[in-house]
Length: 279
Image 1 (tube, helix red, strand yellow):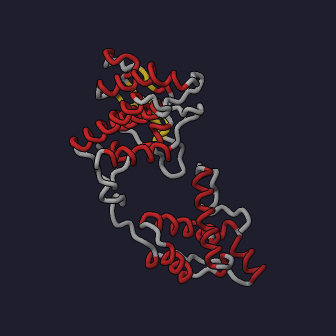
Image 2 (cartoon, rainbow, N blue to C red):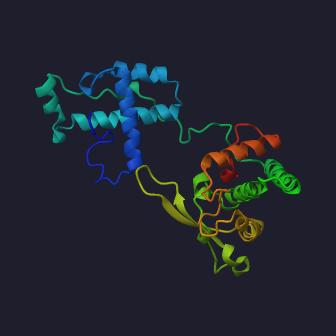
Image 3 (cartoon, rainbow, N blue to C red):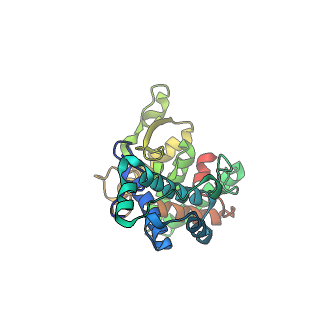
């Protein structure tokens, strides 16, 4: 397939992100490897067999089928010349193998796990109590990881307090907290500027400004930034959530810490960091 773009023609003109294009290309190459042949030999039956053997979630299946569908549409579009080229070289033409009758349907507006729901007030209190307790224990025992524990406890309060997604929170910089003229009592913590919001597929991140609702959340951020973050020793780094090595915290670290404190609070395993946003 060379470097054919699996998302269809004109990727740069359509402003599709490199990540989206590369992701679709990987899917198409996986399908090609499973078929053991080139696109002009693909069949609908091969697609169905590949999907049946995958064991993927419903939303993943739809995504994979979509990637193959747009690639086949691209190859079959006369404007790009691939049909003629294939007929001249191999005596066969690529055809669409993804059809309405062999694809997964979009059965619901939201396809996430039903167990992933907002936390109740009691669950929120239990989770944050468990987090604060772990921080106090780490600080009291003078263990090396107490700075990271304090950082993560504050991060989860920010996720809940401003309704952020994981990546939105992880990508925050110190300069992203600014004053709100409508709430001068909050000082420089009146607004959280989200620069890496969830984007439409293929589009750049969305930006938005989230007004501070909870005074305690502003106090938590202020305490962390002024008393704890400087102890990491990397003042020149713009990130709010630093690691001890001077980098930005990773999403996997956030997930791991949430799972640890979720278990300590006795909460259901289906609950994720994103549930704090919905809470």
